[in-house]
Length: 148
Image 1 (tube, rainbow, N blue to C red):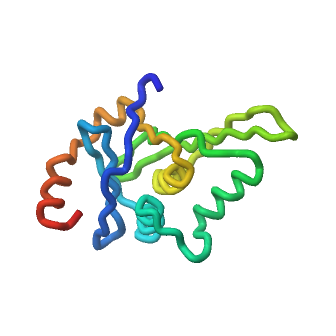
Image 2 (cartoon, one colour):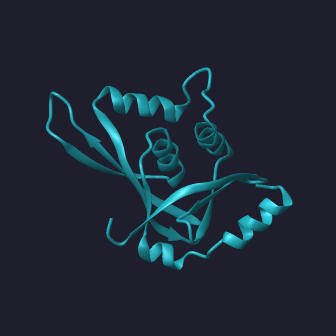
């Protein structure tokens, strides 16, 4: 995607106030904070752990699939102070309608939780990416201390 940076989750760490999510492109790493339950949900999927009952994001993912939809991609589009904003892009195609792309305002944590469940790409708009501090050294230090 032009003017977008594709990122992957590189680490999720519990913090006193929630969960730190580190996203990276192989050269730079950024961080934002999410609720602990969503962090645990994302971490479980990334670790291959299947919960005994569907969690909220599992349910939403299953509903999308039941209606012939899927997560196409998620994009972090804006940062205002400590608040990150994202858009979730869904593609629907079934026997009732032709292909339709839907763009929805969503929290980055929800976008990430759904994207990892459906192996969908995650992007950050280039100008947002450029404005964010590189946290590679911080993540490396935390890993050396055994915190990540």
